[in-house]
Image 1 (cartoon, rainbow, N blue to C red):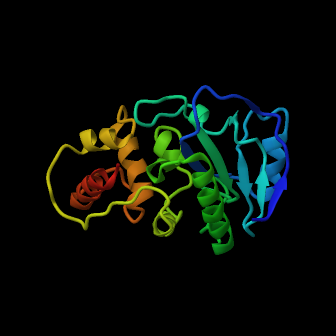
Image 2: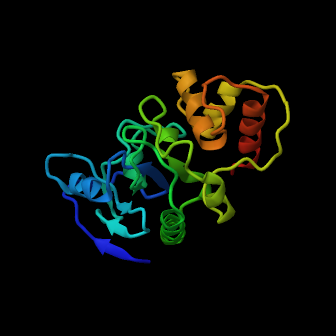
Length: 221
């Protein structure tokens, strides 16, 4: 992997062992602007890694330290996701500057990095998540164009294992069991749709939403 070390001053000590990866997009016009902001003493934000559109990886914070990337977050009853996770930023203009598909070189570098980190820290595949998964009230990155299914082909991340079916059950209970914060149901459904149903981003569940949620729950550890 092509890794450049560009230290950020924004980190502190972890309170939990590493057991998750959180994928973000930068929501900035260029990799350089994102990099400058992540290491700027004024920003108070950071990530462990930043990957450019060409696949160049910048290491910003040591894995053993707690970077400041997830913010107010929740997954499976835990709220301090920064303490237990590694944050990976993908350079992308995001929804603020003309959201675009992620280049193959960037996604291939992400897959290599995730496989490396997963092996190094024994991270379960089910805990490779998007920022919007852990912060559905506030965030929508990495967004509906992110190829979660491609990561899944490499054994990375959540993906339903069952084909769509119309089994009726309590969707919010299912989402909660998977790990989502359901205090705002519409935001929870939108976060789920961004990850697993990107062709339908309306926050309204249909039979496919129900089937995918059930299939995901059935396939999760």
